[in-house]
Image 1 (spheres, chains in turn orange, cyan):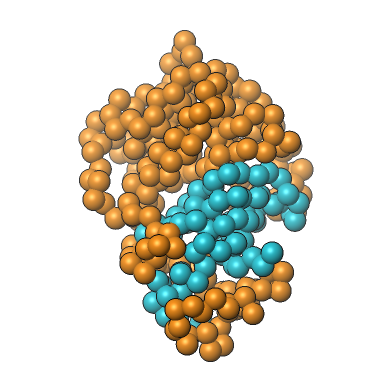
Image 2 (image 1 turned 120 degrees about the horizontal axis):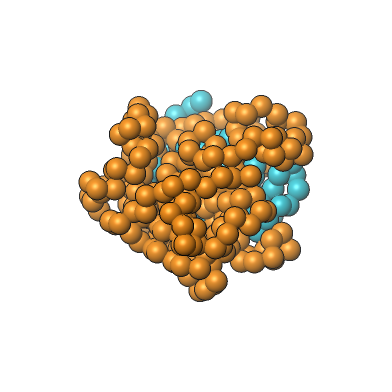
Length: 224
Length: 77
């Protein structure tokens, strides 16, 4: 169970401020409120209250548009939160119950929480998703974690204005992947993500090496 | 690990393809690798979430923060 705390609503660099958004913690309804997607963080504030919760972008492992009504009865924005990177007031007892359900990987290290945002106006789902994606790119992980008094209190909102030219802003698709430029963080991630590919098999694939660097443009055969 | 060709040569072989993205937490996301950015943040389309081999959820679009990705592999359908 998530307990709401007083939140500072971002007033600058706000991309989306959507009223009438229900928030769920795991599958439990927290209430109705306003979802604010700002460049500095995502905040949900309960209606008629100054309480809510704040999600810094580095704590958001995944955000997605959920359309599968068989797993949850409303279309929604799902966010998966790294418990260690978000300052959420969660009662552990209930969480343990949930965590044990999923079995083998006990231990609090990789604890994550699922939060769902269900806007009354479903047409904003894609906008929220897109704005969150852009803001994620504005908030790479800090090399050294800035201490709480610097970052945590919402004070950072005042100084906002991250430069729009900042790295990571550009998206690469099949059309422009030739121009890809990775930041240092991106390169480190790339090495980590693909470093061990040879050792894996995923449905019999995942093995790409050998003489794969023939370098031809239509080298489509990495699966083989 | 052997050194590979530059990132664009490599990445263009997987972009637009069905992939499996495994998170550090052990959860799998399977979908089309639509695009990525300079931090290796990843956007998938037609995404399915698997936990312990079981389909848990489906998403239209899903955005995964690069730091949380354990690996990506091609998913042959």
